[in-house]
Image (cartoon, rainbow, N blue to C red; front, side):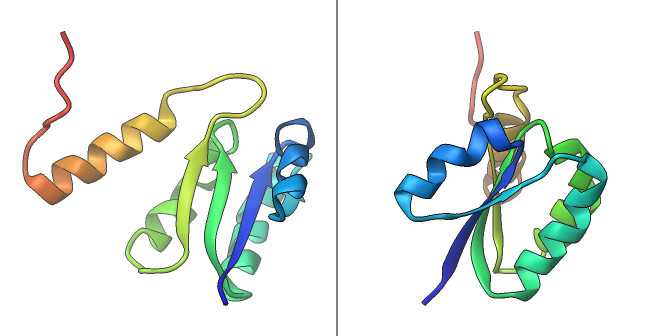
Length: 105
């Protein structure tokens, strides 16, 4: 059975414990790349990462995007949405479809 993890600042991720997910609080962004690599190597199929942490693990996210697993999914944190998650979805849609189908007025 696959495992699911949530990485991010402690305030943003503590509620995920109630849903039965494994949480990995990151107090120092410098620790994020190592934590993400450890989770990927230890059988986590889905890793949710708060958007505020994503800029610190950009290389790792790009590396794992070439693999089927783990799926790394940005989520908004307690301190708001940076738009990074939607930007990544848009990028994947363009890659899959060949054009931007998410029109904005």
